[in-house]
Picture 1 (cartoon, rainbow, N blue to C red):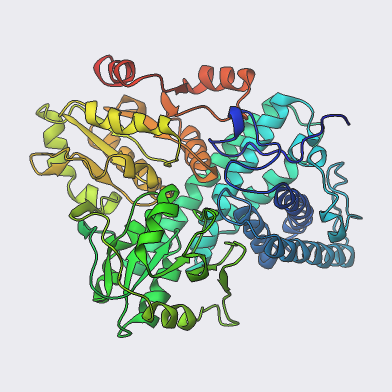
Picture 2: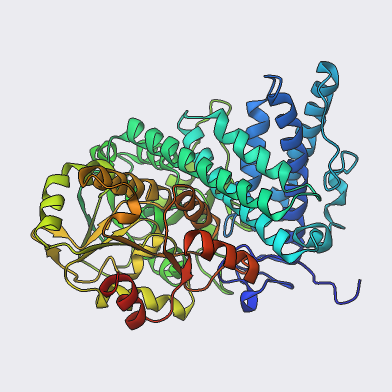
Length: 552
């Protein structure tokens, strides 16, 4: 095949030229790493096919489901750049496949013969795994785009399912949705209509997994509360924890208590500050820095140790001074860092990390002041009578959902300008790292209700759904689309994809997304989504304010 690309990946918003990365990922992913990710997804498709067949007979393996979600999670954008780590995931997937094959034979379970899942492939094929047998294995662009939309939604689901499982909360129906989608997207005879149905099934699974994770977090650590978070620094050595996993945060706080170090949150871990269970730790300091993509600058000034608990890690610049102080855990991998595995009891030993932190100087302050968050559904519903009164009196005209992701491209400045341009009677509902574009702006409040209500992490977009449904009931409306709520959502990676699909599965209309549409949205796919859901992309601040606020 002439002009064969070294790799092909278009799963994130910043993909090369808005079409696809073919030599090296914009995220920093190398072609040999991309090939391993393709092979890993191929291998867990086989695991999913076998487990789906066994599930039909009541014989499904949760261990197999864990292999599937971990494989999907580790291939999410900015999670794993380490070939050795991915090789281990691949070996585990093939071993699990062999185990399930034996179980299927023993129990007389019939497994479908799928052209894109060969049960004779071996882990040794990693180095020769080519792009044409990865994403590009599907030649039809429309079918390929819909298949990848379902797969990327599953990656987002897998991330949330893993965080919930880490806290002891699991739902076999969530695993079933993911495994079914992985198998169905391997079919060569599936058409557009069936794929659209599958995509919405994944979206429904997204609602369920976000509800599961919300339950896991709140039952473990309490309901988030309105919290003022310091963004300055203290005078002791620090540990900066990034990512999304609250179990890791809990274990780190427990093990570092009384050790002369402070723990700071970074990026998507900021909402950890809102949970009451963590307030008992006096060494739990504030939040340091901004969204994930600024880490290569901000980490140079932190001076301490870093712990990455999920995706959001960025390959360092040349001559970086902090990589030997970076620790990863879970599905995260990066060459030249230290990885911490869970023990047989599921717990992690952070003693090496803590000892290293004790030897570091205190962080250098890069900003000072505070930000306010903690407006998850429980907290906002306690404010519901006041909010409803403000709506009835015309003090709040619109809620603007600006959830999602941040990114490094200059086009993201749009969201800051949009927030600044919103009329004073509009309130922003946010979740995810998109908030860093406007959560430090002096936007004020409406009779004590802040104009930026931060529900938390990207998975806490579920809170925004709960809030919308509660308002629908309060105003006795037939649909959430009749509420004074508009959607201007920023996306970057696959967890934003599952949030979008979840909203679509709930029938939410007129979602604007940006800064660009996904590269896997072909013109025909976009046309269908526009016809069914009136999805649109952003344009410019003035026109979008007119469309979403003044004319809506």
